[in-house]
Image 1: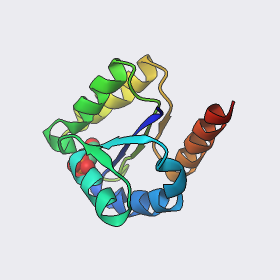
Image 2: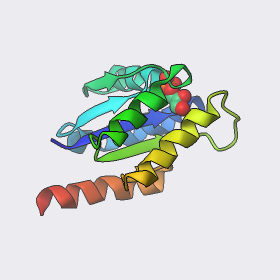
Image 3: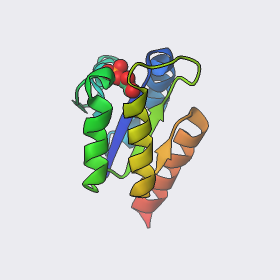
Length: 126
Ligand SMILES: O=C(CO)COP(=O)(O)O
């Protein structure tokens, strides 16, 4: 089963919700996990189930990073807010780093998120 993590900072949550709604049919075939508030908002606005971890500032990014370290995720879509300082910036950096360590597909903006889902779709068809 393809497993994808979804995360958005507050200023990007509306963008992620729009994106997920546009790709809901594809994402319905995947196991989804997310940080606390992101996961809650996605479940309120779509019919998708999201396995919610802690909120980002409370360690949710690190929990998802742990799954990446265990090789349990096929991709991460993380719409970061590049214009606002986050109190848990070290956790955000750790999450991005562990994706690179494990060569896990990572998208941090909408354009690359679309490519990521297209890539997972093709991989599923091959
Ligand atoms: O802060 C986050 C990612 O760094 C996201 O956390 P929430 O989804 O709980 O808002």
